[in-house]
Image 1: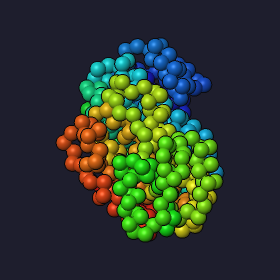
Image 2 (image 1 turned 90 degrees about the vertical axis):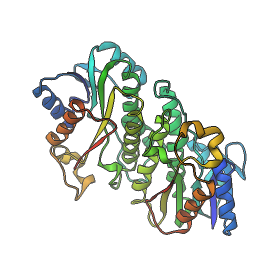
Image 3 (image 1 turned 60 degrees about the vertical axis):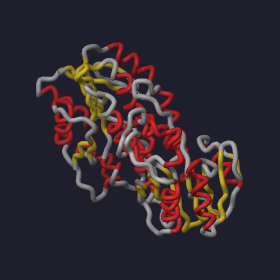
Image 4 (image 1 turned 135 degrees about the vertical axis):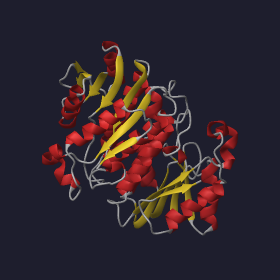
Length: 199
Length: 199
């Protein structure tokens, strides 16, 4: 399959990319500052230009999202708005516009995270954005067929512990390779509207 | 208790207001175009002015939220952004700023809805906003104590069937009075981080 992978250069994205390439897929990596195609997916017009540049897509997958982590009392209105744009609206836009560009039997695989259900201190904005993504996936799944849509919801990945470990105290980390397997399941499988938790 | 009720003049809000007043509470109704205090809660600065006008609050409850209902293929990027502002960011802001104004043992009661889990055609933006609200409630609940926060998640109410009935085909409606009971449970109870479904 020909797969557009947003965040392909990131900690998780690079492992997802490797897993997909090893399974014979063609991966077009998208990043804000690097990759096969440059795009700031938080800008709806940039998403439009992105889809204008790539053709013949069988799947779109997202392996990155920007969220602000601060204690609730320090999070500003702008922090919440930026986190919605960075993790929720950006992914919605990739689906909204992508539905016209991806194959009729193609799929979308978004990313949420464990914080939807299991909150941590300083994660309220990220939790809210994740909750939006998961509910959107369930909703879009009844309007997109035959296209499919799922989300992968990982807990913190081992490779991110140096930077995110202090936020996820006492929560088991998983190797990014296990999360990548969930992307394969979503892209190569036949289910839709599912949230694949990797815990 | 002295309760700030946002959307007190609406179809659901007026029934919630009546239920709270009958139980001996003082209700300060907030609306965009009517009520005891006028406020467009989608504007963070207006929320700041709102809290500057009312003192001694024991609880804040929200019984209204603006969402755009359109088939997924017709929803625009602006529709999603407006729905996040109208139903998710507005409620987040009432909590974020309200935490400094509500009593130490006070509570916040937000509104989500059945679409978080049970989508309908034309409801993708509303589902996403509801999912954000519910995940935010779970997250804020671990940072706000001793203040509490819950959400009421109603299905369509009987009183709204004339306008919303066609969207909720085959889904059982509930009287607004049952939904109002969930607000009483949240405000007078002791739980936090709960989503009270009314189905």
